[in-house]
Image (tube, rainbow, N blue to C red; front, side, top):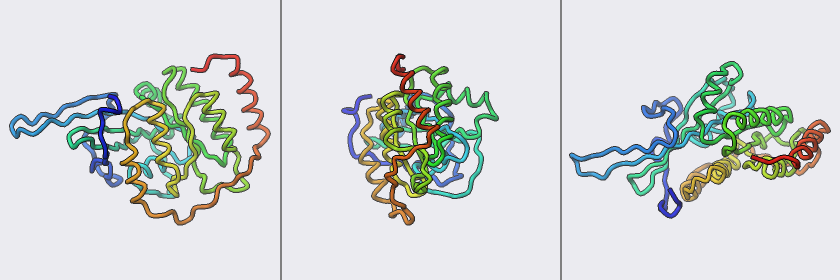
Length: 266
């Protein structure tokens, strides 16, 4: 499906605004499914669907669920709850009878369920890997996750997301521009820093996902509408311009850059 085949404006389907906990009867994991619902008796035109599965992974407590819920439901909670594998669908309506569904699979606590982790990795079309910008160890865990994904899937669309920029101050451990260069140049993946709490750059994360996956859907009108409908953040802190990075993290990047110059990037 090319971008020229999809018109504007896009608008989220009502199920995109389901409240947390509402059931959706068609949320099973389906890759690139194109379904047609015919209405022969009523004479109405058919409804066609395209579905994409995105798996969201990362270390515990980096905000994976918070990012999904902010984008899909526009909600945020400070409470931490371990998740095993929830599906959060978001639909976009095209021309009134054509729909695109993005299934965001929330795969937390993955180390305790290796078979489920393998299943999610195998069936995914794209990945969002989340780390905490205030904890360099979480980025190292994302690196390990990415290696596992590549060993299973080979080259596949990935967006690396640094969350909790609303908490950035003197404690920031993963410096922005150096990390951006490493992820986009060495890994050839998408990169964005966000705040699920303050809804900062959440749309940009999704746009990076579309670019990485080469899904040529012009969803910008719908995303702009979503952004315009949101209240202003109440506790947004200014970003730190500090370029300091702990020596261990800096050495990690330098070692990776030296080794990757001599190999083919998938």
